[in-house]
Amino acid sequence: MNTLSTAIAMDGFVYQPPQSPYMPVIYHDDDIVVFNKPSGLLSVPGRQQAHRESLALRALRVWPDVRVVHRLDMATSGLIVMALNKAAQSHLSRQFQQRQPKKTYLAEVWGHPCESQGGIELPLRCDWPNRPRQIVDHTQGKYALTHWQIIEWREQTALVKLMPVTGRSHQLRVHMQSLGHPIIGDKLYASTPALAAASRLHLHAAQLSFYHPRSNQWLSFESPAQFS
Image (cartoon, rainbow, N blue to C red; front, top):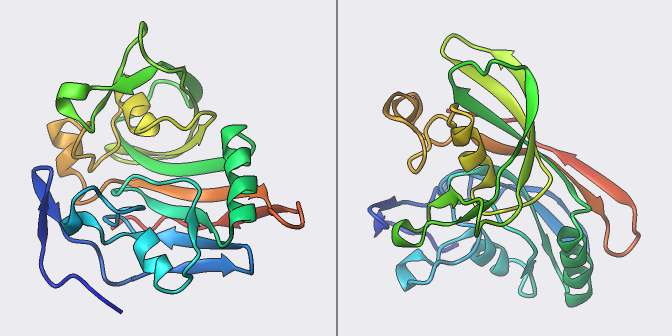
């Protein structure tokens, strides 16, 4: 396996894709492969050659016809599915376009929300002068909805279950920031104490469910969060 032996500067910080775990596979068959992506690894290659090391590239070395269906932010860990043929990719992509898959994330947020659960319905768009940041924009933003529920109260933080209905870029991170409780370790959206509270983004794709592209069976996968 090819590895990166040196850290790479990327958008003001150092891109140093993890080598262990390298490419954890949760499940695979002739049509799909489900990974447990580590935090710090791009889902797909970046535009620059130095940023090509990614989960998709690592998968391509094993499955030459692997195809991307959806993505996770580089800093987010957890479950992601890829297709192993064109028919599977079309089937899965259609599901994601129609918002059929069910996704649940776990996040550790700074502070204690006043309520134990709720919904955040705020439209989002890219903050072009400050890419890749996203912002709330009630005029030009795209519809975005996130349901959330407190799982555990901690001394200065809370463990929250996040259930996005839409899949906008950085949706969960911006929505929790807008609630006044950013995800700790978030280098883009966290306040100073929230950023200092963790060395990585505490956001993990913990559950993923969808219809198998060949059998049409409803599949569900789980991955416990291991924030460290």
